[in-house]
Structures are given as structure tokens and as C-alpha cells.
Amino acid sequence: MAKNRTKRILRAVLLIGTVISLFYVPWIVVWAWILPLPDSVQEQLDEAIGHGFDGIIVYVDEADKPPATYAAGWHDRKNKIPAYPQALFKIASISKLYDAVAITKLVKDKRLSLDKTLAEYFPELVGRIENAEKITLRMMVQHRSGIPNFTDSPNFWVNPPPKSNEEALALVLDMPASFEPDEDYEYSNTNYLLISEIIKTVLGYDRFQFFKEEILIPLELHNTFGSLGEVNMDDVMSGYYVGYEADLKADEHGMLATAEDVGIFLRALNDGSVFNKGEQEIYSSIYLYDHTGWVPGYQSIAKYHEDIDTVVIQFMNTTGGYLWNTGEIVYSRIVKILRNKNPVK
Image 1 (cartoon, rainbow, N blue to C red):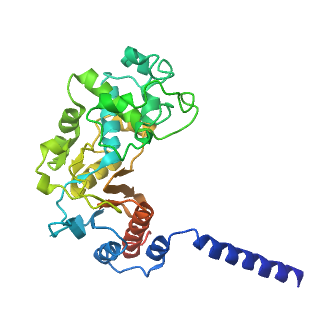
Image 2: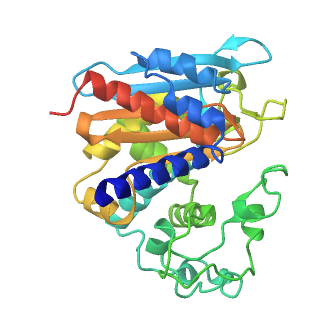
């Protein structure tokens, strides 16, 4: 009797805790989570538009099936242009995967060393970036440098984007380190800003040209670009922020690509075909095989799901509020739809 009573009390406490927690979770997120799962990816995209997204593109590459790309909502809300699969999208931090591949190739060719310090690459930063003499290239790749993140600067996303890497780096010069090198982890875009400058210094030309030569051309990726200046702006999906009416697509935030191009790259990254002999072992020791991306107006997820041998890329062109959380729920539901059709053996 006492044991059963204890169980009843425990269940009641858990139920009360669940109910209370729901009051602290936005209902739009809860609603996106509890809705019945649609039968198809396209139905899930159409449903996602009702959660507050202006437009969405999803690329799916399932093993032994032709890849498929889906779209819903608006490519350009003002001009009433529907979303379409071939649109260019700002991939934001997904570009770090390309950086890590480039670092890998340059390390294999002995043009870079993972153990060389920031001070050795850029002596002028000694005294301007704390611990520059201790921070190695490996630590920067792995976000273990302790260098502050320039995008965390006050009002960074409110102000116009920095016009150059020099302007962006200036935001964190002379700031105290977040922690001692290799003693902790903190995601910092400053690491990859410095990495891009290291690559440029070693090569004598822009890192994106190296991406073209070593990644894009071999994989026949014709719809991946380094900046807005390289593309027709009409091809770029508009970007929106909740509560802000203006289209954000004219803001420069680095690389753009179609969902298909990102998907092909991610498949090659995970199956190893982007690498030459001896490179994949280096890459596996320094970085991840999937990534997310976020800049105002653009959020993205790029992952490979080994259990169903499937790549899923999701682009959503609205940010702000709780849309990141909602976007993750939409992505997880898409993967669940695919798993239901391809149960793990």
C-alpha cells in the first residue's frame, strides 16, 4: 500500500511539474511539437509556414534514391515570389565546415601546422589578443582558444555588419580572454575570422578561391559563392526578422549556396570523398561533420543521419522570437518522417 501510494505521489509530482513547465514554454513551440506528424516532407513544410516562417527550403538525399528538394512559403514576401528549391541562401556558420576542410588540406600539404601559435602567424596580435603566444591553430579550429566572440559585442546585430575582417576583429582587441587556452570550450566566430586570415596569408589569395579549387570544382558545385557581390540578387532568398518589416538580404554575411550544393558537400564530407589520402584522419581529429547557421533573417541546419544514410539540409528565411527552437522541431519532424518511411534495420 505504502509503495503504491508513493508511486501515485511521484506521478502526481511529475504531472504537476510538466504542467508548470508548459507555462514557461511558448505555445507556438509546444504546438509545433505536439501536432500530428504529417505523412510527407512537403506537408511538414506547408505546416511550418503556419508557425511564423516566411519561407523554407529542404533538401533530402536518401541513400539509393534520387535527391529531392522541397519548398514552401515566400522567396520574396513583398513581391509575392514563391519559395523555390534553387534559391541562394546565406549559409552563415555552415561555412565553418568548408574552412575546416581547407585547414585539413593545408595541414596535410604541410603548408599549415595545427600546433603553430597565433603569435607565430600574426606577431602583431601579441598584446592585443590575450594568450596569443599559447593559442594554437588547433585550438582556434575547435573553439578552445578563449578568444572573445566578436558577434557578442553589444548591439552587434543591430548595427550594420562590419565592412571587413579588420573592423570585426577590432571589436575584441584588448579584451580579456574568456578562459585560458585549451581549458574550456566557447563558440567564437573570431576564431574563424582569424583562420580565414591565416589561410589568406599562407596562400597569398582569398580562402574562397581555395574552396573553389579544392572543394567546389572537384564536387561540381556551381551554386556556391563567397559573397553577395558574386551573385544576382534576385536569386537570393529574402530574409526577415520578427517585428522588422525590411528585407535583410542586402546585408553581407559571407557564403551563399543552394540547399542542393550544401547537401552534396555534406554527403562528400561524411563519406570522405571530399578528402585526398590521409586527410580525413586529420579532419576527424579537429572538427565536426555537421553544422547549423544563423544570421538575421536566415537560419539553417545541415546534418547527415547515419542510421538512415540520409543528408537533410533545412533553410528557413525568418529569425527572431522562438523561431530557432521551432525550426529545430520542424527539422526533427522531417527526419522522423524519413525514418518512418525507412525504418532502421
